[in-house]
Length: 180
Image 1 (cartoon, rainbow, N blue to C red):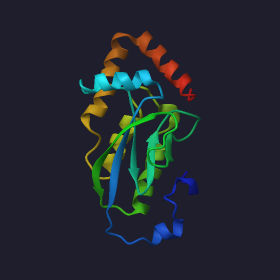
Image 2 (image 1 turned 135 degrees about the vertical axis):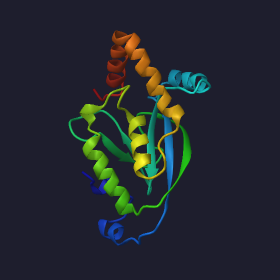
Image 3 (image 1 turned 180 degrees about the vertical axis):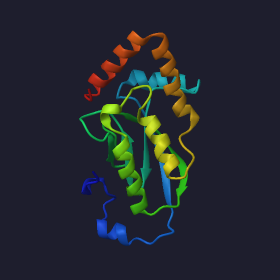
Image 4 (image 1 turned 90 degrees about the horizontal axis):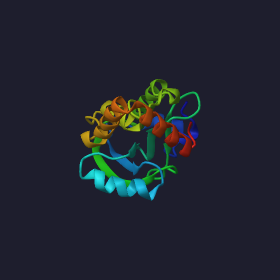
């Protein structure tokens, strides 16, 4: 599951021999969902209400980790920090320092990759913001900011009151993002 392209540029041997008791910075990267300027403008307004349409990821040991729908298998992916090709970077937030070695972090990522499957992705109830919350908790940092999770809650209420409209919006988003 964790190939060489998902490592921080170091070999497995270097990672394995790293000293214990180290700490590393952890950053939360928040993107406007997709590349649309309309979403960016809407997020500027909605952000004042504490909601928005966001993609989120966690950067630790020089890799950015996120969750998305896609082919069968894990929905956990990594990329260079602040370089998601499907979304527009909005901001980065320092979340704290994890008292874990890179090997321990990669073990957490392996565990996450087994339970965050792409076929289980749900635009409202199991998305990248929920993944970020889980990952940050496993890193010992208390989870994602509430404003990030609040957007999913607002979308869930929309889905309850307007299920057909919510279903159409989810299909359109997945199609546009080329991940359906």
